[in-house]
Length: 107
Image 1 (tube, rainbow, N blue to C red):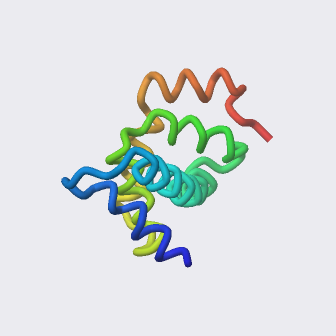
Image 2: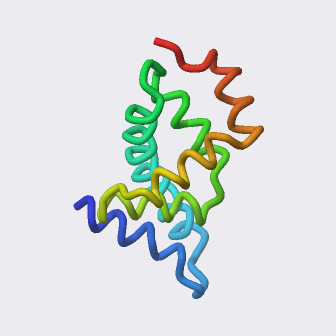
Image 3: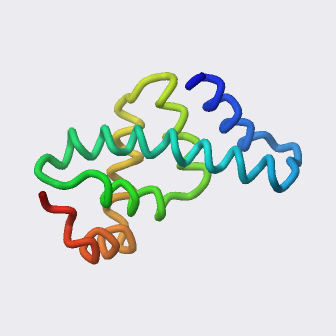
């Protein structure tokens, strides 16, 4: 099932046009898969932080292409490239501001 969701999500990378509901559904599925991956990376690379709000900030500041790329790791596995993408997004000014507004997600 997880692989199927990811495959559907990855169809968003297709250059062909999708209907708005299908595209929205693919984007939502990709965001869900990406959140799982980002949460794992945050827990690993940012110990002591409450991962959920940090994950939300990272996902909210990622482009859809980045979301789809991160979501793919839910099927293929998290590698150095995935971690690098997540950490690069985490360092963006808007992401840092978001994390700060969420009180750094401290436990």
